Length: 193
Image (cartoon, rainbow, N blue to C red; front, side, top):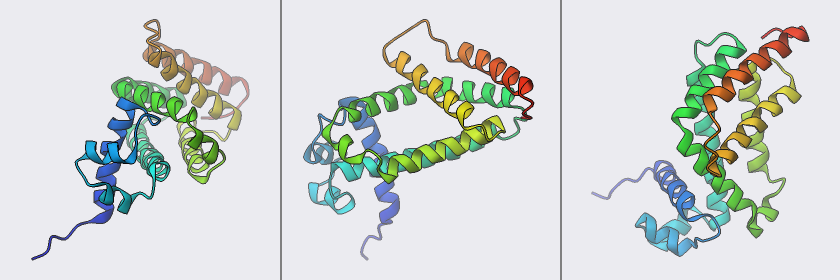
């Protein structure tokens, strides 16, 4: 009997393996042939699922965004106040620190590649930003776009510092302070969390 392949599951498995590969080697350093060899598949198989490296990366961004959003929603379950939610998020980011440092490295590397210019303003990045923004509205319990983007930029900056091996940075300390600051901001401006 012929083997029945769940193509969507297989595509996701390939993407999952690609994350580690890109994080180790960088986007710029890899060709589709090298990716296929590292995954243990033929280049034909890889091209069946992804027409080129840029498309593979776009799908990787989508997959990571979906996974991050679902994990964040699960982590925040039960946390009531913005301060509590930020504490939970801080603990989660400490647990996943290596993953997010690798993701930061990969994004920085990708932004230096010519493919990035082709993808600026592309739907995949706009969609990911909107998804992350929605999670942070929920996290903070407010519809304050400026506050949401401040928190998102702080997190990006934390992981950039960790990528650069800044050992003076503590995610836990930063999120403790951030929780106090957000609480004070929300109280001062009469916004309920």
